[in-house]
Structure formats: C-alpha cells, structure tokens
Length: 145
Image 1 (tube, one colour):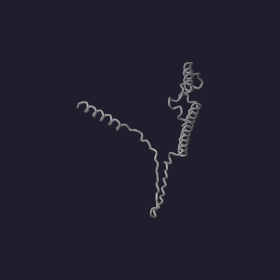
Image 2 (tube, rainbow, N blue to C red; image 1 turned 90 degrees about the vertical axis):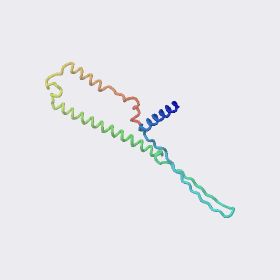
Image 3 (cartoon, helix red, strand yellow; image 1 turned 45 degrees about the horizontal axis):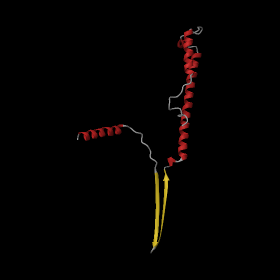
Image 4 (cartoon, rainbow, N blue to C red; image 1 turned 180 degrees about the vertical axis):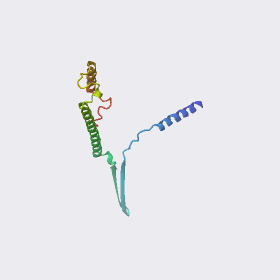
C-alpha cells in the first residue's frame, strides 16, 4: 500500500506543477459545416436532397496570413526608422553641444591638445563601437519574418 500512496502523491505534485505554469493558449482551427436536407415522398416514390457546406475560419486563409505578415514587417521597419531618427537627433544635439565649446565636458580647454593616453583610449573605444555587432543567436531571421 505504501507504493500506491507514493504514486498518488507524485501524481498530485506533478499535476499541480502543470496548473501553475502559464502556457500560451493556442487557437485551434475552426470550421463550420452547414447541412441542408429536405425531401418529399409520394407513396413508394421519394426524393431526398442533402447539401453540406464547410466554411473554414477566415483567419486561416492565405490572404489574411499575408496581410498579417506585411503588417508585422511594416511595424518592424517603422520601429527601426524611428530608432534611427532618434539616434540621429541625439547625435546632432551632442555634436552641437561639442561644437559650442563646452570644454567642461571634455576636460580639455579649447587651445589644449588631449594627452596621448586619452587619444589612445578614445580610438580604442571608437574601434569597439564601430565593430560589427552580431545579433544574439536565434534572432538572425527576426527582421525577415
């Protein structure tokens, strides 16, 4: 009897784990079948008519899926474009601030040449920033879909 109680306890624990997980609800394809039938009889002679019409869920059609994909691609491109504009605007503001002669930010006065170590660290930081950055694995096709 000890074995069965352990088994039921194990089943109870594993079933409660399944209930606590939040799983993404999946949409099952829907179809509707309409059946029309009628007939008439005259003695032994009779005639019956039956028609079945099956209508699939419209969201499964090729046109709807294509429109949805195009909308997602458009949203992604719009987001990329807005981020580019934002980066360009902040870069322009930064350059304007630098060209205005704000020497307090750089630590170097207008007529002074920066130290060699500062130039070296700035060049290495620029090289790291200019290096091509690959997206994280699994995200290579995110822009395509």
